[in-house]
Length: 134
Image (tube, rainbow, N blue to C red; front, side, top):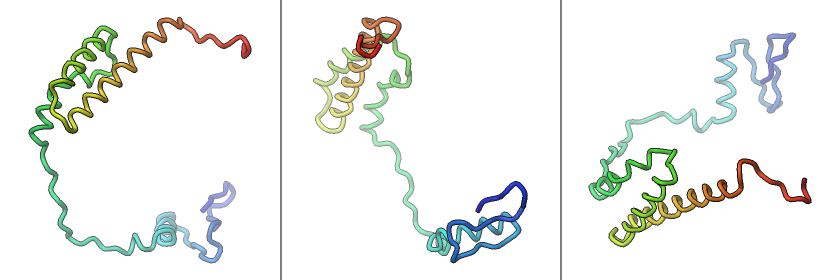
């Protein structure tokens, strides 16, 4: 429905075969919802059994307790090098399974962040365009 500046009456646009009429905006919105999603609005909610949320597994809690540093989005280069060194050392001691994937992902992300810092340092304070583009 579109509202024009001159008139307060809506114009039906998308569905000419289903004209939505009404002067109250609330009634119009309800009618549009029925037109767009009749199967969704016709469903009555029944007291369905919703599974209760499960707690954190002890293995997950033990593993992630040592990652409080991950909540800091602004690591210094010195901190990132230290965490990268810790993660590489941890890779040898972590059990095989999902923990190995998490440690490997951290190693990859920390090394990418460090590479980006080195690249920005070597590049300088501004981007330099190639001579053909400049």
